[in-house]
Length: 33
Image (cartoon, rainbow, N blue to C red):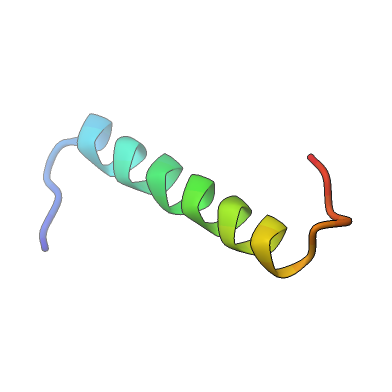
């Protein structure tokens, strides 16, 4: 997928970060942000 708009790229990046945090918390419940 090619993202030409910087706003869309930023939105996708934040989505990936959020998913990563959720996965990390599921894997390690003691990790609290």
